[in-house]
Length: 187
Picture (cartoon, helix red, strand yellow):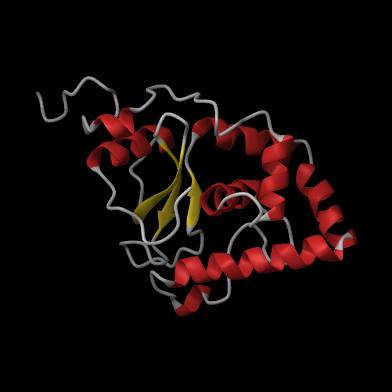
């Protein structure tokens, strides 16, 4: 778990992200949460991408195992169940609203494009729209900050404490290409 400001992103971390996402990561300003092996799980993304596009999803889930786990929950209609809980429990709704405010505060430290002012992610503060975004916030901010993200994690088969990475620890080795052989830059 990491909160702003973040240490600079390394080439090795960007290489792992490229492998995780299947494309280059855009606008990464830091690693907000890591797998047990040290690879990125959640990135913090600039509120405005390098091409000028406003991007409200400050905490972005990148770990393939976590992403699949949230997709499974969404396919199983877990979002509807969590939304029903949110509607029925005022204490939960208040905590979720506070999570939204915390998210906006974290992102505002890196700019606040007018186009996304007041917009966080995942449906906050009143809906459950994207478990990927809500889990990303939970993992970045730590337990107890985003109650819906925490519940999604508890319902999933994935755990941040168990590494499922293709190349465990690649982001920490610093070899720069994400495959662990130290061959970046070679023909």
